[in-house]
Image (tube, rainbow, N blue to C red; front, side, top):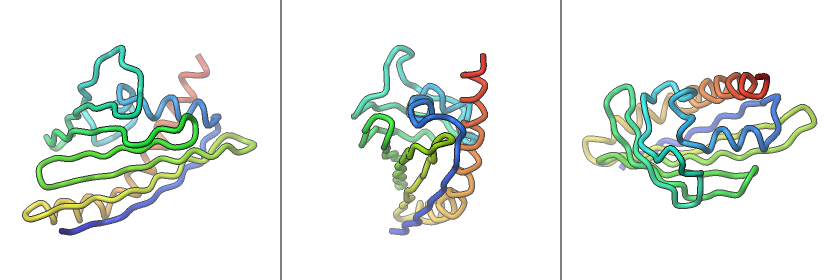
Length: 146
């Protein structure tokens, strides 16, 4: 098994409540997650502990995900699997005077022939997630400006 850990931290000019509410809803993810084409989750389902859905990525991977931790406006975590790959992501939301900080931490693991894919994706995950969170911050700003 190969495991690669990653981290990212982004300052947002939005409240922790605004950032949390937007980021933890899988229905919003195709708008801000660069590697994602679509999600399969009921349109009226609100985020909750144990929520499960599947995604379609730009490279054709269809992982299945589940929310493993949910503390409103503070922490949210998911675990995703696809064949021999497992990815875990935790977002921590910290209120600041001028908005909030979103800290992402996680790991990607792979076994057998999927070990190389896991190692490669884990290598770029931190930078990719930071870029995605910055895009989400812009979208949150647009949502609250209109």
